Amino acid sequence: MVFEKVKNILCEQLELNENEVTIDTSFEELGVDSLDLFQIIIEIEEEFGIQIEDAESIKTVREAVRFVEKNSGEVQ
Amino acid sequence: MNKVQVIGTGRYVPSRIISNEDLSCIVDTSDEWISSRTGIRERRISEGEDTSIIATKAAIKAIENARIRPEDIDLIIVGTITPDSFTPSTACKVQNNINAINATCFDVTAACSGFMYGLDIATQFIRSGASKTVLVIGAETLSKIINWKDRNTCVLFGDGAGAAILRVSNKEGILAIYRGSDGTKGHTLTCSAVPVSNPYVIEENIINPVSDKVEINGREVFKFAVKTIVNGVEKLLEDTNCSLEDIKYIVPHQANLRIIEAAAKKLGINEDKFYINLDRYGNTSGASIGIALDEVVEKNLIQPGDKILLIGFGGGLTYGGLIIEW
Image 1 (cartoon, rainbow over the protein chains, first blue to last red):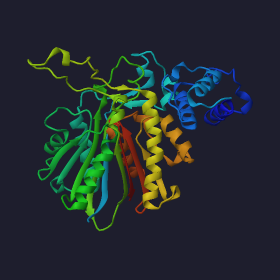
Image 2: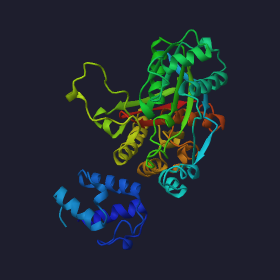
Image 3: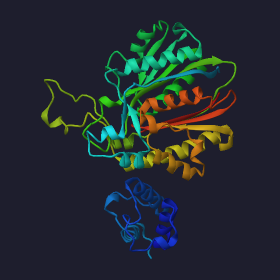
Image 4: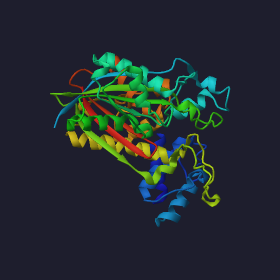
């Protein structure tokens, strides 16, 4: 499911434990800066085969998951 | 086909050091912001020396280290996006400065890949028999095309030059070459030249004024840069049947530490494999790999027989790389 995959990407990129990422976690809480966001978006794009144009508007895990669900055909 | 060796390198950077702290006095930024997002701590900024002077100083070092005479050089290639003038070329100015009377001279416009394209062209000229001794320089005075009011870009760049001498040899020193361009993404990293202006220009043909300073779409360029390092390293290794263990150092274009870290992670290798000096120079575009290569040589980090992988990427978009056996 999308959330699990997004969570894995976040944990991998930010070197976090799984329990640090929930659907309600904001990127700000995780200390994500603009370059972390680049990397996260690149990984999400590759994982789901989608293009994310307006990356800066995605601010929480939930928004990232929703974006993927809307654009990739994958559902939770 | 003739064989090619790199027989000497040189570098020059302006003496004026500008720290992150210094920049925080002219734009709203901080050492913490710049160093955490880029790895850059200081850069060299020209106090007036233009690109041909910076290029000449690096060239003189490379000529000394290669133990050749300027008149031995039959080709001079300068990779730059910041020439002194549209004409004469930077390469012709260097020719004049060093008295390389037997050389043919031209510039190559490939932004941060300029030094890679230059080494590539030099190799092809030597292999074909058209040249015997080539001077390749990557030289930039980026400080003159930076918007010093834009805190997102002015913190990234620096001035400098790196040079190398390539010569026909009985031993092959260039083991593999990687190159390419993607003009479809040209808009992601731009700096305009002069607009069309003459008595016959039709008003409707005048497009919106474009910036004559460097503009970057950070995310697109970041993505391109990471992919290029990963693909380039993999392709060059494949072409030479080498593994990463066979490579002493990877010298990437010194754009941003975070790009190098992301690429290292994707390649599954330790960052120590990468030679990094961007903390001291920032991004010097076409000069960066030449400067780094000269430092690697000067510090005796590579010995004869060692292999080193160079990989560049930049505006155009352009990319290129080589594996050199020292």
